[in-house]
Length: 245
Image (cartoon, rainbow, N blue to C red; front, side, top):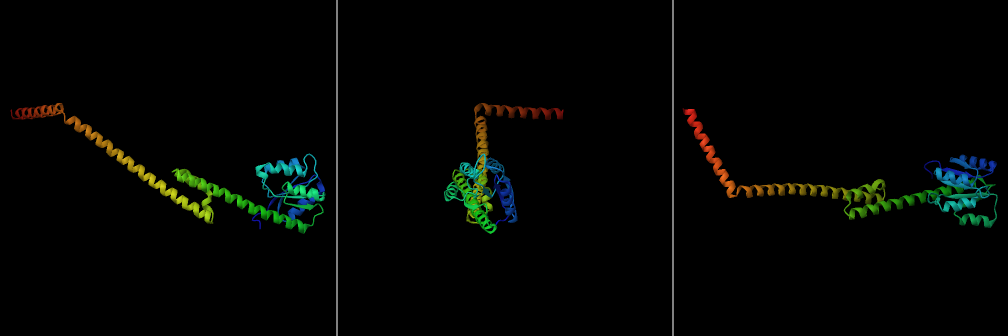
């Protein structure tokens, strides 16, 4: 069952057929956009995201077969389901359309009940296909995060998890485990950096103390200290004599 009305494109060069098809689709509760030929249909599909294409075979500029060929070569249109609806009911034409990627076929003198069931079936297939693609994409994100974590790139690993953590399945659980691991690694990394910084400070202080010791331990420095003490003693004595006198 659709959570929202599907967006369906009706491509037909015949105005009456196009209107009839659009009204039938709207009666099923879906949103409809129309195209007068194959070129317009391809332009519409590259401009807007659709859930299903109802495609006429015999059209000027670019016929239904040409549209199907172009869709097979366009990544964003490869998985868009297509129901071919045409006055051409020869078996070889139907087979050609199916071989080019169409999901199903209906004659222009379609039965509304049959149209409803065919559209529902195609939309259900698309929903499961979209879920599969989204799942594989999330698996890819999780794989990249795992590789980054293994290489010690913890911040990158955390950023790659993204919306995978919001999933309520095992993949989401695994993403949340990776997030916890990344946070633990970051915490340990910060603690280690702080320890290294503190150690560097102690090393610097020790080196400074060692330099002072080396200076104060020389005979020259000791002689200066003795002379300074003698001078301080003389100054103290002179001060006392002045005060007493």
